Amino acid sequence: QKEVEQDPGPLSVPEGAIVSLNCTYSNSAFQYFMWYRQYSRKGPELLMYTYSSGNKEDGRFTAQVDKSSKYISLFIRDSQPSDSATYLCAMSAGPQGGKLIFGQGTTLQVKP
Amino acid sequence: DTEVTQTPKHLVMGMTNKKSLKCEQHMGHRAMYWYKQKAKKPPELMFVYSYEKLSINESVPSRFSPECPNSSLLNLHLHALQPEDSALYLCASGTSYGYTFGSGTRLTVV
Image (cartoon, rainbow over all chains, first blue to last red; front, side):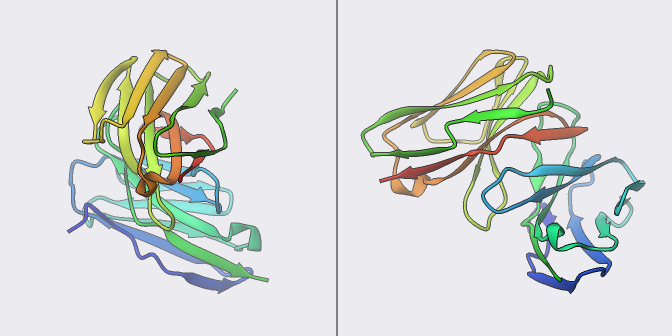
């Protein structure tokens, strides 16, 4: 079993839809949770960071962490064609110099 | 300056060549990372430098040799690579509060 599981998709939605992306994990030591967006042939770009359980909102993006269920989510409201990319969840047990473990990434296509 | 800069952006090298990838950050981060990413796969950790010392080596073959000359620079020296080493090589810096990745070097071994 992988430490972090993420459905690779692809996920295709119409413009304006609410997108829900999810990851599950098995390591209860994970405390730091991130979502990255990666466009083709580019490096990953940090979208959201959450420490421990809870919600965090930034514009159209909302990240949720449920440590009791070992489940994290990213919601994208009013999705745009420019949101078409691969979304990677990532998590770590320690604050610095430790391993960042990635999910497989979900490919999202938002159709105009 | 909130960027991680990687050079070169593209590199084609033969199996007998020696080349180096370079990474620079000026965000004051004391941890820097090398990742390897194959197509349609997530990044895989190769090395971690913490306070300019190698702290994690994920059993990477010795044909990859990392170096951290100072707190802002990270190099990856390449020698006698194989075609299967062709990939996007990503440098990152930061902490678990948010790593910043460079745009990567796309390496092709011929």
